[in-house]
Image 1 (tube, rainbow, N blue to C red):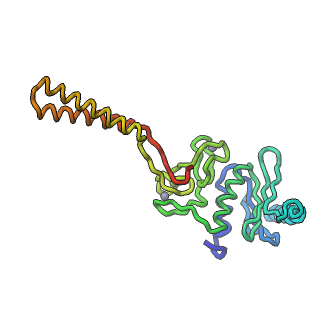
Image 2 (image 1 turned 30 degrees about the vertical axis):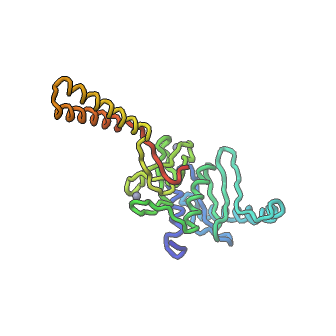
Length: 242
Ligand SMILES: [Zn+2]
Ligand SMILES: [Zn+2]
């Protein structure tokens, strides 16, 4: 995907339209012209917002240089009720996003991946997940698929289903390994073996027949191991969850 594709910029605004707690986005050229903006903004408002973004970013440039020794890449205006106006320069664009602070940060993270040509893809169906969204299982708000925790309620959403193929993957698109707990598994085998040997002795004493003793021991021991193994705790692992 490059700037020459028709949907290159609208992919960004479409993504923001889907997200909860993002009020609007305005994608602005370095010269201060709105390139693409949320349906919620009129052209007039988008132009005024673009002018403000340019003023904020370029106006702070000198001040930032004096204080930080570097040009400002981002200005955050806190509106006070948890909402912010975030003006950020990414590549050759200025993005202005209004919304709840954490939600804006998460959205900008996905947008930054996209603008830097980095993709998060599903390891199974290979679909691009950079602009995929998911619903938080706790607060049911629509959030970016690539969020590790829900930006609205803080719930851990590091593991989720791919929206295209429904397989469990991590928020970074890594496959998930589901492993049975080693202690529980060993316990199932040892417990089953002890019970198997004990029942085999019991069957031998009561029937005096070796085949019955062996089959009975294997059946009871095996069944016990199987049932205990099924109840063993499950551990979910992925390379990028640490
Ligand atoms: Zn949530
Ligand atoms: Zn998939």
